[in-house]
Image (cartoon, rainbow, N blue to C red; front, side, top):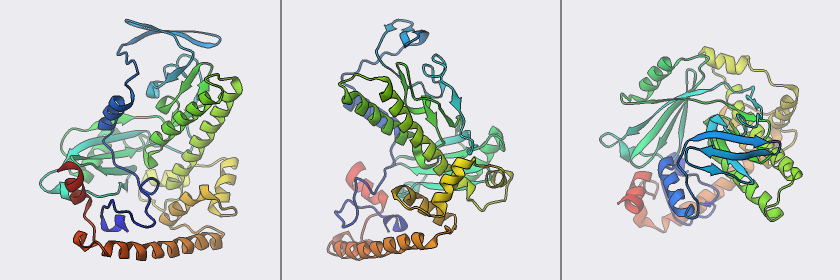
Length: 365
């Protein structure tokens, strides 16, 4: 309801949990600075160039930079797509996800002009284009927009032209290349890769930060189990868990394309007709799409199916779930409206301020 009417609130509303029911648009640069200042007070930050990495049968023994020599029991590889430690030094193999083809993006940070800022929305807008999709993420002082596409179907010049046509932006843009896929192991010997150095799906559904967070939590849990002692089975369990998660997420993202009904470009024809799933993944997807089984992990797929106008074979389970949610939402809506009605001084169309009004009053005034 808040999304439909583009309204914002911090009221304690029945059925709305700000810890689990909402997400936030964040300035990534500002977040990095905040985390550094708030949580990294006991961290030694060395800004230097790596010149040599030494290793033996047990892993990395020493990292030599221009001005330092670093040794450690555990090295966490945060070198992004370079994967300097896990892949380039220890030789752990990287495998692409077979069902994804987007590998490029063109993006820009676009300032608001005139009263554009008053049009800030409380949702992330994602719109399909000829060879991928366009994101729009509104922040207070600017909006971030980007076109994720496949270089199999567009070159940089074509992508930039389409991006500018869709956004009416004539300023500077950035071109990005990324690889989708995952290393066969996240933790090998005394190196653990977290983030892009381990694997990446693509920007859709913003799974990158999720997997970073989850793998950090897994690491902390692993270290706490035996008071910082880690044996081989701990590493195996970590790898199994990390691998299972990122593979499941990659399949989930791929379904956004596979179930599309678009056929108005070579790109959309390819992702809907030319990508073949292997037998195991087809079995897994069949279970979800037909709803032969229904558990918590399938709930997200319900909304993807609805958006793609796809009816599962076993409709009863889906519509049972849908009717239950609809009834629950209706009940919450009545409670919510009564709750808000008691605060008539906040009334404005839907009794609540727009995101712009709310942010201006409570955060940026």
